[in-house]
Length: 286
Image (cartoon, rainbow, N blue to C red; front, side):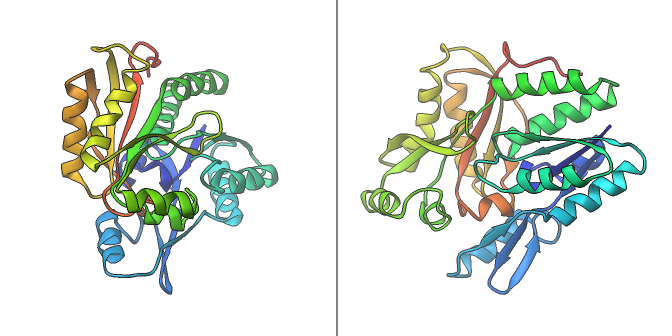
């Protein structure tokens, strides 16, 4: 069985190579130039370019043809393919994969993770480890449902203009929040995979500290979590969030992850987020 994903999962090329995963890059356009996210444009290069321009970046998914070609090549050695992608509520990537899968001379199962960044990456990693351990497809799909059910994603950011420009929040609502200096805490909803504002704070620091406060409404103090911080070129904010979580919960931390260009195009520099799952609810990975 082969695994396909997209660069919205924020796994590195090295991680994909080690896991045996084929990654198709999302595309980012800045001005007249289009880049392949994670291939010919690193996260730091992207945020530096973003700081130097007044133009808003545009993003696009891998094409149906890109997916069809990837499936064709993989099917030469294994006709069973799992194609695991960022939320359909935020991107057309899984839709393009579905179209290509329906035309492929292979058995392609497309999985909409209903999340993004390493929330998707956790599902890709789990599937790849299970494939390498010899698990069958139905057993893997059952495990991925458990991972999806257990995992949540919250984030906050200091500047709303990129979310407004990308249509992720309404212009009027975003403009009002910006004028008042309000920093939202945003959840990626696991039902429809879209962004929802679930908290508001008067400063970025308070918004970061508000993430563990929100988690406390669902889980008791001292709960053990599998946790990973994601950030858009903001290591200081990432450390603030780690410290805030460690005051309340017991976290088994994965290494911090930088948000790649394709997702950073919708947030700009500064975002800090938390992917987390209670250890008691997270399945044992092979």
